[in-house]
Length: 254
Image (cartoon, rainbow, N blue to C red; front, side, top):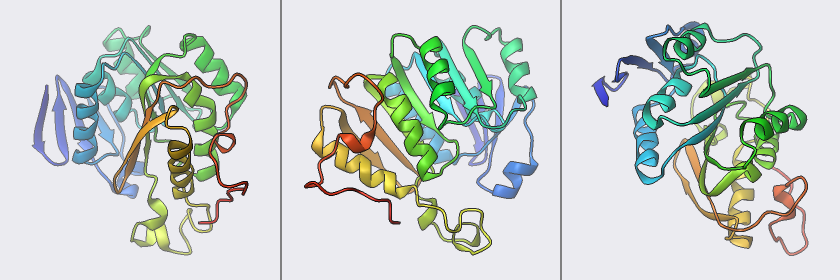
């Protein structure tokens, strides 16, 4: 049960969440076993609840653990049977470790640290071990937010998403947001390839192969991709091999 104290403070069952969209606060703050920092807006949380109402979420993969808040939130909302999460940083999140132990979730929540979402060898090892039947209901990419890494992760993970499953990519629109953090020359994002290039590729894939992508929902922050019933070819998947562009090659230019 979700109880909103205000737009930034949420209680789910016995777990408290402090929501913030401020980059400095996100990096400066920390989580505890009963009070987690969550880098999401109220709208994003409510969208997750809506996904859970529309779809029976039993198996989840999340890329991007950060302070552990989203893993715990999704665990509380969906109550999945299996939840694998990866993060590039090698240091385990203590609050998440304590949460797993306190709630006896060792067989459910499986965090993997020091893993790049773009590392096919490491990702395939995790995916094939945790989800050998390729039957993940929900995938969330809240990791690098970089075009190349996010595209690589999609190529690796999409074949493990079951037909009718949901692939959620957060913060796709950072290159188009106002604020010095995103537009300034001193920004860590300055000069980086915009993640919106991947959205263009996904639109083309949905047009060329509606059997693979049933539909795409987009707002100012997130894109939600619904997997179709089509059969993927064997071997490594590459999105660029499956959309038509009149013989032309798509180059990420934004």
